[in-house]
Image 1 (cartoon, rainbow, N blue to C red):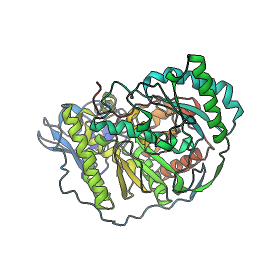
Image 2: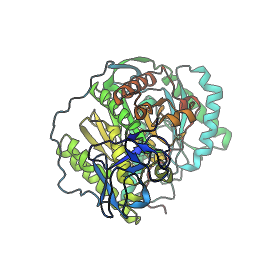
Image 3: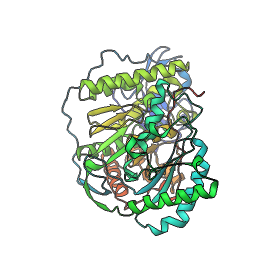
Image 4: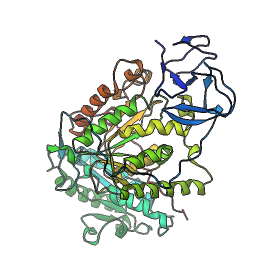
Length: 502
């Protein structure tokens, strides 16, 4: 049955749950055009310049007169002013009552006191420069075929390949972002503290920029230019890898408190349902995790920018609020330097799915963070110092946000989608949550959890959120593998590099 969904009583638009034909009467609203699934219908007569309100928020201002029952899409709205970063109020520890989880432990790989645990046991081989990635890819194949069978407790070997390392302004101020991202990803909880770095020997990203002096030795670092030919390189690399595999193979899963778990929340291929089904379900699961002691990161600067005041109010202290302002302000300047603003974010697929502009997308994106207080704000690739809900200020691009969150220490990611994407990470399992039933029906072997029942009234946000929470713990404990992991669907690691390329 086709329904209208109005989120807030002040909204003057609602979305249709299915494709709706001209002349159809939906709850007393007669449609004046055919309206695609997820798109907005005017609930009253509106004039040029009037606010269009969804989520109780002004999405924009009409560029033409609209009659009740009309289709409102992305061509009809002018963006509102960008929310100011000046004088943002923070909550100063205001109490929020979060739901209590029924489970407070998981089975993970402990990395020692004060460190997050792994959800997988992986050998990671980090490159200093793209030039060596061909050799490292061959190495990974050799390890899988000849060495991994000997070490059953090691789940996989992954190559931390990237496009950075040379032909770059290595000392430019913004170079700190890709350098710390590569440096920190080596410490990801899923890698068990084992360091294996492969360099060339003439690159700008020298090993001392990635490792402290005590770790720069023959056990951890190999430079290809030190060897006479490919065969010698490969022999030395395999010998180094076997030493690391022996250490990793001694790791075992143990029962750990949720305080040892760090996960990331991300969304991509969003649609108008994302903000009312998949993302709020993820937000409820996030609240359960945080309530149980876990750390949850959410990201995507342009997709929170229009709700920055809402995030600031949830910051627990001035330090978090000030870091939020600094990171968002830096990104505003970064976009302005490229002569664009946050309106460049929505994709054609977002718009086809009913999202008219970045304001609407942002309101739906923010809810994946739930209601928990924000204890800390991180720059791209920075490591957390606190536990709880964290805003990791990364670009919104899926293939940039993912590596940034990995560098900040997530051991698992939850990815919400409306339009669908086969996105995955080799370095951490990715749970895929879809926003509508049609997506689950189209991709039953790619979607791990369907939140579409919320739109049809079959389930509540809390019910889906609880199912997602339980799935997260099952995946973290190694009891289940998401489809992307089963099918080995993994994306290239694109580390954010705003510094010049020379």
